[in-house]
Image (cartoon, rainbow over all chains, first blue to last red; front, side):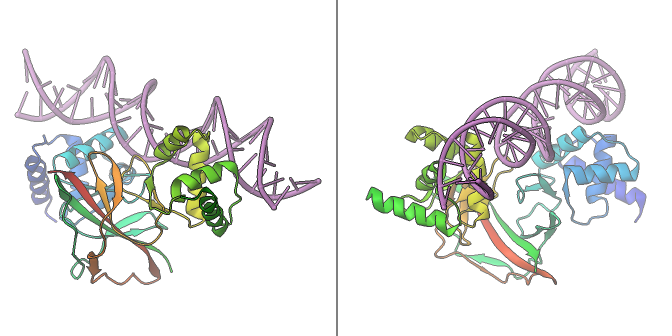
Length: 139
Length: 139
DNA sequence: GTATATGCAAACCGTTTGCATGGCT
DNA sequence: AGCCATGCAAACGGTTTGCATATAC
């Protein structure tokens, strides 16, 4: 992975959301999308990554920045656990596995999943998103 | 609605969960399943119903009792909003409408909804539930 | 009589916010 | 220069818990 190329990607990603490339945002964005892989994080898990990487970002800023990324449409919030918020770097509508024993969120292999016969949105409403969460427990 | 019949239904419902029919539980259970309709509540909304009905139940007991009903398999928790917990008197797997502007949860007309091609559960795991939440916003 | 349920208030925990400082353009 | 981001600590809101009392069996 070319570091310059990575930085370009991350900066472009921030710019797409109209967000200034500050040190903290670059740190967080690099951890999120630096390698182009999809990632699922909580505020705490992302915070742990920053301290592990040696780049200091306050927890409050992690929270605020995740919210800013979300508002900018750069990431998506996924509600699977009342206790904490999960964020997904993939912004399109796709199904998730939620591993209840480890509180982990991953993409489900979506190729074959199809939801048919969705009811029409009630009058005056539109479908904002269809969340599909496959909850997994130990067999 | 015959009051005696209703009380029998509610008592039987509690017994099915192995729960003693205390005054508070009868009050809450009657509000939940007294008329046989499906219902979607939060702790706060159910608490509001009790005070409206004149039967005093403390908020903590509403929380604890909802959790007890849930553990007993009498109701289901549905996670749609990080801020509060919703409970559904229908315990089978079925899709929901979540009305984002009013923070309301309802059953979606499920007759035609079909999810096909669900991936197999990963090794050592089994599918506990498949949550389908159709998020609605004002058109 | 014994185990369990209830109520209150305090603890809890993830998240947000007010405010002063610092950085980007 | 001006606006916006950051960090800290304090506030917040929904939920849970410790403990004393009351109730079901």
